[in-house]
Length: 56
Image: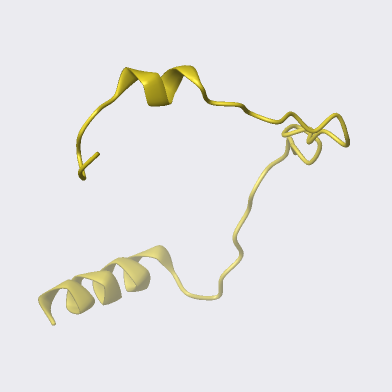
């Protein structure tokens, strides 16, 4: 078959091997918490700097 063609017979004979070994728990490292940022720079100064960066 050429590139991009579709043949249903190829779909029927697929054999997927399942690994009965170790499974992955996607929630193993979930964290519930808070994020805080501490800075010596005032918010107004940061906003001004952001404006300068956008103009550049």
